[in-house]
Amino acid sequence: VGTLAGVILAYRIVGSVVKPLRLVQETAQRVSQNFDYSSRIQITQNDEVGETARAFNTLLQAQQTAIGQVNRVIQHLADGDLSQRIEGTMQGDLAQMQTAINHSLDSVQRTMTGFNGLSQALLHGQFNHEIDYSHSRGEFRQSLEQAHTALQSLHRMIGNVDGVMGSVARGDLTQRVQIEATGDLLRLKQNINSSLEALGNALGAVHNSTRQVA
Image (cartoon, rainbow, N blue to C red; front, top):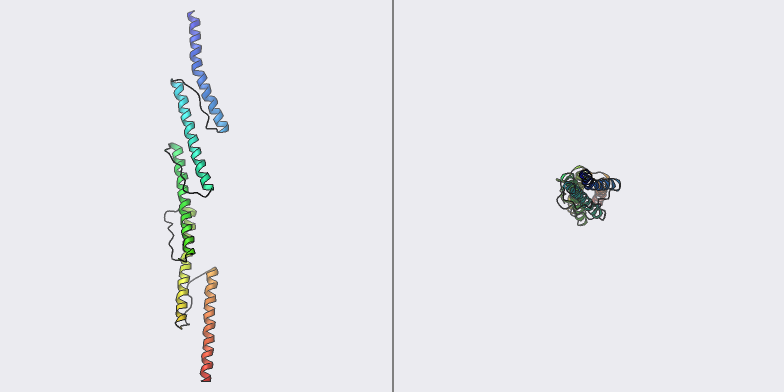
């Protein structure tokens, strides 16, 4: 009877340990196959096996929360909303992922803010607008820097043209657009200088003819 009672007791003890561990194993396999982090282990035990199951459930909850946050932020990003960030306190690799994604969104937002400021400046004719790209890196910094350089070139060209036209208004046709330029700005420079050259020659001819008539 003692032996039989011992066998029954041992069977129950082993069953109370093996069954929860089997549930943990099945849940882990299911998550590894379909990546469904909403799965949970239903265990009410308060022993070490129960603690293990609760720890695994906590891990699944953390993963589910992190993925949900990432999906939310990426969806807003796809809709053009750069104001959303991954919130909450995360640990370990999840914290690194949170920091990396939030920093990436900060970089994109700074870049878009720079280009929006540039667009507004061009819209209002403010060609002396300064673009702050000091906190940007990589291609973001390169894009903003190139936009800033282009705006400065346009500002210098307009300033030079304004000075030349001011001289023309005062009757001085000897001034020319001197600033270095490329593309459309170069053609603008050449057209203005050619027009001034032609106007100067025409006025010179008129002056000579007038002197001959006189």
